Amino acid sequence: MTPPAKIVWISDTHLTASGEVEGVACRARLARAVTEIARHHGDALACVGTGDLSDTGDAESYAIVAELTSGLPMPFLPLIGNHDRREAFRAAFPPPGVAMDRFQQFRWDAGDLTLLCLDTHSPGEDGGRFDAERLGWLDAQLDACRGRRILVFLHHPPGPLWLGLQDAIMLHDGAALIARLAASPEVEYLFCGHVHRPVSGVIGGLPFTTLRALAHQTRPGHALTDWRDFVARDERPQYGVIIIADDRIVIQANDLEEPT
Image (cartoon, rainbow, N blue to C red):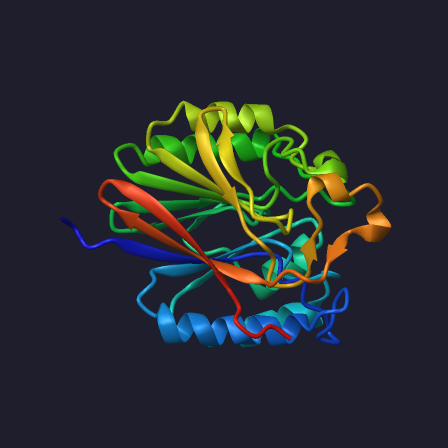
């Protein structure tokens, strides 16, 4: 059996210049996660960040993220989220691999594994968009990756997850995206950010998982009836470890043991 590959996954760091957001120490949490990842998962091929690196989209917060993630012993592959700002984001994190012009959308290859990292950012909206231009780029990459194993990463989940008020700010036009991905037998799994909650399921025949944030967590759908009551402060932050073996994909969710 071929030794499994490993990808580390973080999401929703929401860095600010002050180092604090929604009552938690977002800078210290990211620093601690980098330390744990470097200590225990230095053999990973890459670390993917599924959006909302910054809470405010300013250059200073991106500089902090870049400084902290430089301590990772593997490439850092960041996606853009609704809190991010594309121009400042791309200035701090030029997209790696085979990239799309103007968007933070790219393909990253390692052996027979391909990561397709998608840009669902829609300026001025908390929900996401994935228009015909981005779909066209995706079609070209799916054609180019026939016979490879594909994992797809994006910030906004493509459709409702029954998370109360959050369902209004998912990917608004996700049906076309899911149809494209489901038609490709190479696509094995979707990984999404945005919701700050652990959720797994199947959308259009494709399995997906979301992860708790490294910053603040959110209340479950039945408890989220008012945006003023959004934050769940009693839940720990976590990062994910994705193990890709010959016959399976395993996702381990690791809580930070002593979050600040």
